[in-house]
Every structure is written in structure tokens, then in C-alpha cells.
Image (cartoon, rainbow, N blue to C red; front, side, top):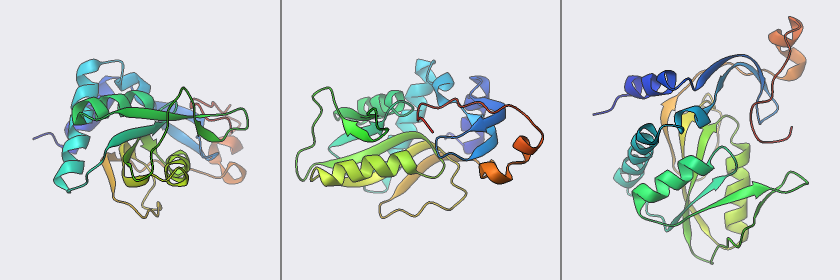
Length: 194
């Protein structure tokens, strides 16, 4: 059985944990960042994480027709989750106005159920945008799954939520960020334009 400690070891071993001063996709600041793209460089780790998420979701009795992920962070994980689950996979990406949309010929059929897959969830903003997109197209959101939950228990969802690890990294409003107060330069490592 793979424990949360084993999963944290995989993330550390792949150099996914970063320290510094970061502007998160939510706009909040943090001294820690989980760059899951680092762990997804390794196919074996990617397969392990994805298999574990699919097992958790299926053990809970959640059924889904497809996987959908927000670009860019969720694409690799979403693909491997869909491969492990044996279902199709699509992703939503940001337009010039920073809104999520379906492109590349992707579509959602009314009644189709989706597992939304993200790498890291903090405020859940990108995931909630994708959930809205699915629902507006007539689809159904079966659940949300991620590698790491760093929401600190503040995420309110109307669907089941599955994460492989829970991280308690403090996040700050920019106005009250102690790292800003120290004059440390801020880095924006994610794909969402804030």
C-alpha cells in the first residue's frame, strides 16, 4: 500500500517542491510552491500517482465518462488518469481574456459525466471554472481529483473531492505578505495570468 509519506517522497525526489516567494494562480503569495510538472517528467511516477487517484475515485463508487483538466498544469495528470481509467480525455485552456474554454475540436455532450483533474488545488479557481464549463455545456461533474490539496480545508464543493496528499503551505494576500514586506522578489511559476 502506498502511503502519503511515500507520495511526498516521490514529489521531493522529483524536485517538485520549490521554496522562495511565489504568486499563485489564485493571486495569493506563498513561500512554497509545488511544481507538479517536475514529477510528471517521470513516466513511472506519473503512472503511480494517476493509478492511485483512479483507485480512490472508483473505490468511492464515482463513475465518469471522461476526464477534463484545466491547462496547463492539469494536462499531463489528466491524460494519465484517463489512460489508467480507460476513458477519453480533454482539456480546457485559457483564451486571451483569461477565461477557460474548449478548443481544438473538444466538445461536451449533454449528460456526459466528467472527472475534473488538476495537479494542485489551492483556492480551486481553475477547477471551478472547468466545472462551470462542463455544466454550461450540459455535462455533469462527477468529482474533482488532484495530486495535492493545499486549500487548507477552505474549498466548498458540491461534488466529491479526492486528493493524494494534503499540504499546509501558508498563503497570503499580497497586501499582507511577509515575503513582500522583506522585499523578496515574487515569481509567477504557474500558467494562469494573474
